Amino acid sequence: MKKWTLNSWRNYPVKHIPKYEDENKLNMVLKKVSSFPPLVFAGETRSLKKSLAQVVEGKAFLLQAGDCAESFAEFHPDNIRDTFKVILQMALILTFSATLPVVKVGRIAGQFSKPRSSPIEIKDGKELPSYLGDNINGIEFSEKARKP
Image 1 (cartoon, rainbow, N blue to C red):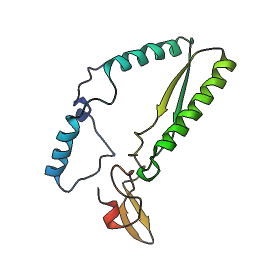
Image 2 (image 1 turned 90 degrees about the horizontal axis):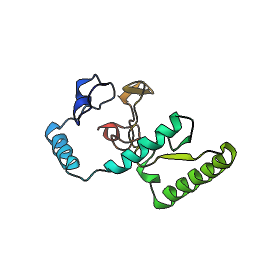
Image 3 (image 1 turned 120 degrees about the horizontal axis):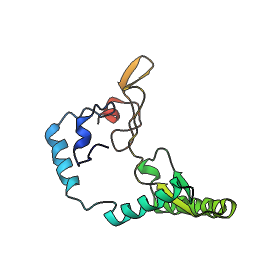
Image 4 (image 1 turned 135 degrees about the vertical axis):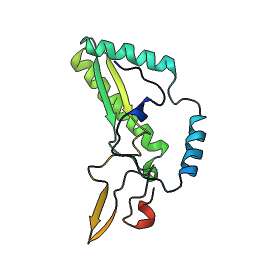
């Protein structure tokens, strides 16, 4: 296995990176984001690795659930609570039916950017960049909204 580093992903070809017009502004945002505390702490990662090892050995069941794509407009505490509620309900059913512990992994608050099969969309003969998720551009089919 190759050694992972914070920037090792930059050594591989990428297909779904938007083209930002203002590289200075992009670098400013990247610098700011890199100063934030981690979203997941090392202990949580180690705990998940141990739990996933149990799944691999057939001693636990993996339940991954959540939306494939999220929008900022629908991101609300009630939606998050309801998603957790459904995940816990599914886990309860699986625990009793599989008679195994259930490792729960939520796809939550991270599906705001999505790759597309094509970098462009064409509607009524007009060509614009594809919608890549609220984190990148807008869903409205207009030049302004589709600009990253």
